[in-house]
Image (spheres, rainbow, N blue to C red):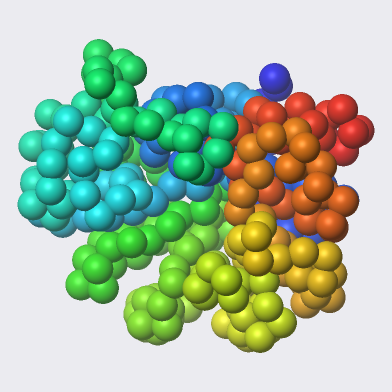
Length: 271
């Protein structure tokens, strides 16, 4: 699949006929999640945005990891905050494989790759800035956020990526640091597609929102259009589910299988 040219979030937001394809933790349905390899494959597949998660090491380095602990995806145990970056680099982060849905993933007895290091936020920025949009899910504690903000500014990420946050405390912290940092606010899962939540996101200055498939539908996507929000629905991995979402009016899909989303869109003449 040919590489897409990324022209920035504004261009992506304005093109209402284009279905935004977001790769959840990179190409996580086929490659180790939240790794540089998974992100490279997602870009090759044609994703518009790569989604990944940030936590912070013991020595204050933002690293790419979803869980509160290292246990599921690596051969290390306990929290990332208990290890400095050098120690984290000794781990192998290819111990988990997604299944066809969220419930069928499994931890592997042996790693999928002989070596698979955890990436840092800065490494992701160095490799992918300007090539693809970034949905940066922030799970770091408030005290550790300053370094994430600094790197965002250092790499001039305005119109390149947004920080996805779930608390007003984080939102206020971002505003104090730099009001130009773009955010995507995520209320509790079952509320994200409601009128109240979507209007709140609009008031906070969000351009992108992330409703959950089980708690959204045609009314949600209709209101998103009225409010000027782009909804990247979480999530759909199969051709059938992707088609169902599109029929409801979704014009953005977050998926572990961005390749399947692109194939479906191509069949429908919408890629």
